[in-house]
Image (tube, helix red, strand yellow):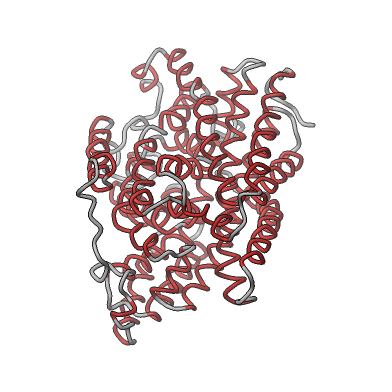
Length: 535
């Protein structure tokens, strides 16, 4: 046991135990309903859009979102990761990319790459994605361990192992369905448990204007301080944010990362699949109130946060929880934090399980086994994924900011992949080997940029991640050049997987609130309004 920041009472532990028992109960209830591979890995493609949209958002509302974004708010200010770095890409996924994923009936993103390119491209992406998901799930485990170490006094190792075992059991039993239903419940637990922090913080500070007066210049604005790199804490200008974050990293994550795409693939029909990320965007635009605002409050209320000898930015939200939640209420806050971390980790584990089973094991180890065999392999993959994630949790512990570490991983794996998808979906001349060599070149370029550019070259780690994402350019250039000198697939093989060779879907007979295009347009209007309001 370590030193704790707060005094807890038995009811706090009862509430923490409740979330463990609850998610395990869901796993047991759904175990007998998970019989086929499609049941286990894709929930039988039978879930309504409102459920998949909440799961879509909740799977992302893990350690990165709750702990990492609060830390980012305290360190850099602004809401760039939401109104520029998430919502435009979510709308693009729903309107343009989900028709390809869903209509082809692929079981994973790498499987789409096999249809569009070749087996080599699928294999490379499957392996790199499996590595990334294990590293990211390690972030969730480390974050959970950090919270309980600081607030409850559990050791880091104890927290990591207990959390890992719970996620292991309920995902292994119920598969994606278990994960989705617990993610929906966890979505409401997260809001219920954390909503009091920004409310009480605003009361203590005396309102928005009083808080802003105690913040560094530009922290409460989105664009007014982004004219030059030396005018903001990130050390980057608006062009770096728009292109590095808003275009490459954002689109690379939200449109190609199977963790989030998998939730949309579980929807009951194409329209529901398209609406999944679009409905989620409505909720996404208000998440900054839950995580960024507390980060700003931490700067105003805890002057030494992030400074030498002071608490880490990663502790911005836990320190506010300690400030406002007395014994008895602390259990609610801890339950919310626990729900968010388990949700994020479970999302990564289910995505890893599907890709490992279908795109690695079935493709290269045992091709013609029964469906029951692959479900069994999937359950064992959950075990393997969780065990390896325990090890990667200690890698995350070596980085001062989990947000910077996560964006670094995305610059390695997601940024180059977006170029492969963009050319593959919208340029029919892109060839199978153009896709493979472009993806490989982009990934290697990202690693080389990290290795060769010395630490401290960029004004901040986050600025380095934004510019390093331009390994996308290497992937794009190599894809085009190789495609010009190699043979493309015949158009007959590209129908349904390339824009322009795919039949357009129309929803003219549906109500306006069910039509993806109209909903996306409404979100765009709100997005523009928010950027102007907080300019």
